[in-house]
Image (tube, rainbow, N blue to C red; front, side, top):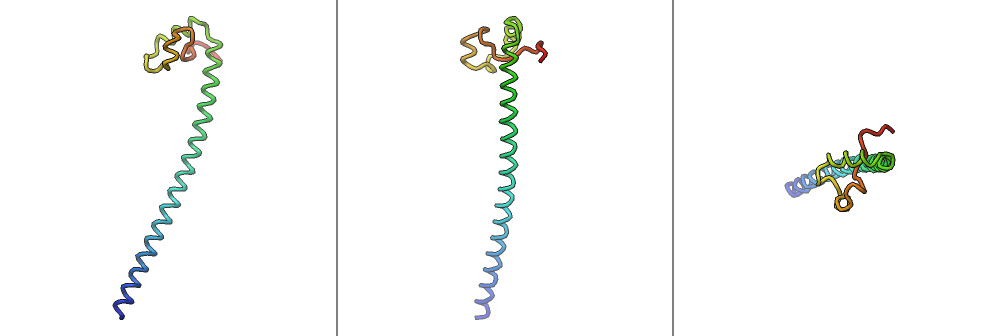
Amino acid sequence: SASGASVVAIDNKIEQAMDLVKNHLMYAVREEVEVLKEQIKELLEKNSQLERENSLLKTLASPEQLEKFQSRLPAEVLCPEEQNLGAAAPAQHSGGSAV
């Protein structure tokens, strides 16, 4: 019966150790998720800002600047709808505009 109690004690220790590891991993994962959520939030804000800047620069750039800039871009950078419209709907702003 003493060896049976010893086995139960060892099983309990193993279970406690596994619970400790599980809790540690869950804490680490939650922490990482919070960091990633914050990074996603920052990237979404940055993306929104860049889209607004791009839109503004498109409206301020001359058609010649837009055509020149668009001709420098590889075809795969342009969206399919922008490829169909050609220079009439440029994909990016001109590097020559100062805003």
